[in-house]
Length: 163
Image 1 (cartoon, one colour):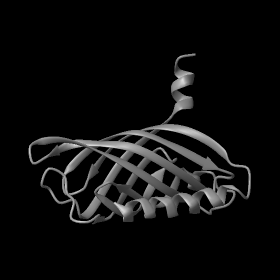
Image 2: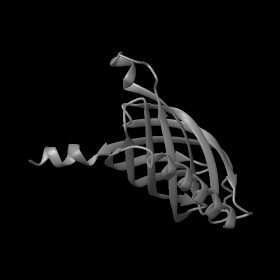
Image 3: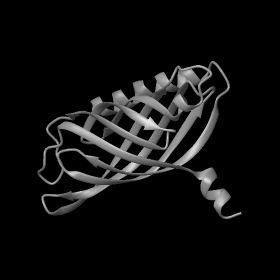
């Protein structure tokens, strides 16, 4: 558990220190997704998106992973930090996709990840999870290949739908 707290603290300090240099715009998003981590989990939560321009975008998120492990329902909290990168200048269509580099952590594992996102709304990522200690969930070990499909819905869209 010490290692997870340390990793989360270091990631938070890194991302928050980059925001101190300039004014960033923040947008809130609702997150719905699927994670395969040696077991299938559904996700529900939220993310904060920070941007100054559209070349480099930062995201911080917290979700609840829900699924069945060894025929027992389980819920795990998950935090994530992502950097979305696209350095093409003066070409609007190429800004429809971004390369994604990030990390996610739960109370059971930490996983660096890479992937691609379309408009920052639909993410497809993969990585490798490293277990924290010898903890698992309901007797199921959570290490190895990690695959995520995530839909990020900006709250502005939801607000505008009900005007």
